[in-house]
Image 1 (cartoon, one colour):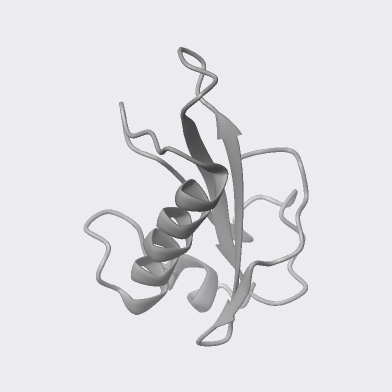
Image 2 (cartoon, one colour):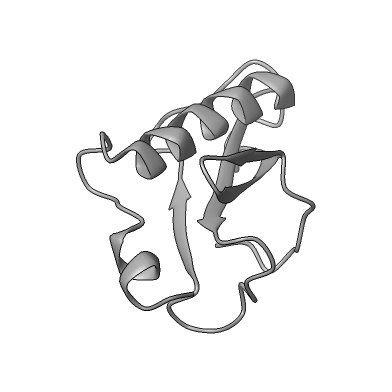
Length: 96
């Protein structure tokens, strides 16, 4: 997860979605993203208060906007429970 705090890109089903696009390490003309999902007002620096995520492996995008769009799509799947590996269950059950 990025140490950079961002305003949420979207409030979705009671969760904040935060996504930060950045150039890839191997090609500054391509972009990737990191992000997290949390409850509104949660402190992302506290352990267990967010569900962090990032682009997979060699995924890269033509623009920061395209990377952001994909990151928001992934975050929605985490909230919806359709992501194969990540879920908001841990922050829901702990009340964060």
